[in-house]
Length: 88
Image 1: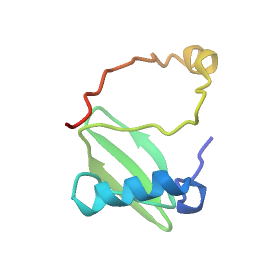
Image 2 (image 1 turned 30 degrees about the vertical axis):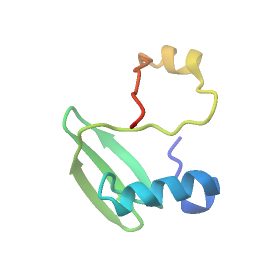
Image 3 (image 1 turned 120 degrees about the horizontal axis):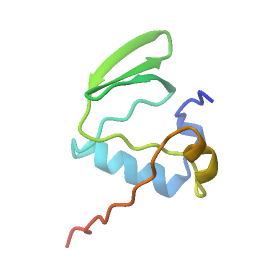
């Protein structure tokens, strides 16, 4: 599926948290975008009528509260968990 990352689909507390991170320059948010390709070092997006290829450090896949683990495994996608320390 190629679903858009749309502002109207983000819950308000999450939207506020994203906006705060963007304001601090920690993330770049591209609403109404669709991922069309991912390589080892770049991601290509369709943002409205424009195609953009960007270098990345990390990619966050927003796939819902319960990821479809069985389907992802069948697609050859390995799920990993990392521990993230909260800022003190």
